[in-house]
Image (cartoon, rainbow, N blue to C red; front, side):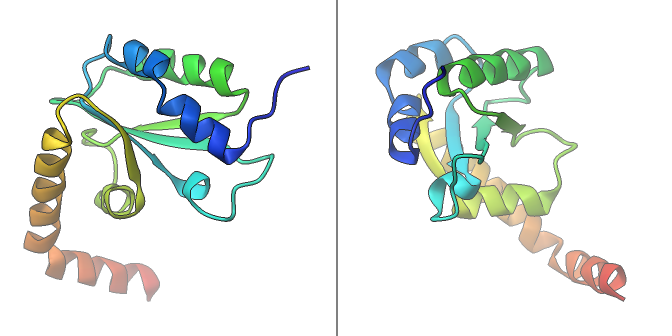
Length: 139
């Protein structure tokens, strides 16, 4: 029978040296956890949500490899987002950046902070458009 890890055990595994060594083989600089894993809503049925940041968008093959690796490691369903993906909605990026927790960084969060500032700037530059988009969607 597979081990069902607690929230704390999952976070410890994701933050471990062994996982860092695996992640270092991929073109990414930061990994964040977000969603129920960082709230009190995490249950035995919860998946684990991860977000990746690289210097550029991360190849789908790499994301799928990491999903399989983490599913085998944690015995849970894994959802991985590439925050640099142009297909990812700006609201999702903002939500992950504001509420997620960095658990892996190759550069002491330098690339994360640059990406955060870039995303925040884009959001602020488009705030009026975003407001009217929300109004249209809600009406």
